[in-house]
Image 1: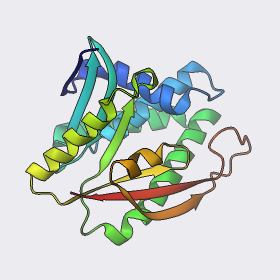
Image 2: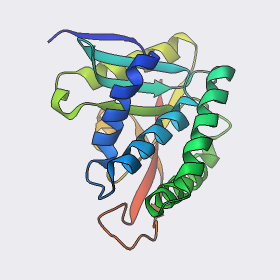
Image 3: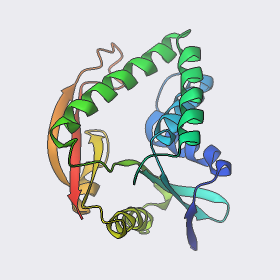
Length: 209
């Protein structure tokens, strides 16, 4: 298996949305069009923050990626991504699954702000999004992507990095990579269907570089 690592391009967006869907929305009992909206909305939300974007490829297929920030996403990228996100949000307002997705996003962002508050002044760099195709896990792809990002931060003289995760993600992986849990908050999305985002706990992890 010859995995190549390279900067993300627009051509990679389709595969990245596939990975987001498989990781987060594969079991959601919604129509495909709503799942696609969720994936597109989240991609643009994260692109509005990321200026470090690396993909891992097996041939032409994206099998993993990492988004982070070093400074801020370029202004043009922020404007385009936020505009697209606004369009998706407006479209989603007109359906029950769409409004549910917006509700989850707003609650999540509010909780994440609370978790970051004690560290906001001294911790500016976030590992924003990090996914490896399930069928490619165990080959060191995730470790390589994470190391590439933290090495890049070190070269820029940055001393730490933080990330948000939750009980439904593989947070033990981050502990294995040297991240420490610095905060936790319970979250109740108040959704009747308990198969979708039931009460969970959100975490902030920090790694000193």
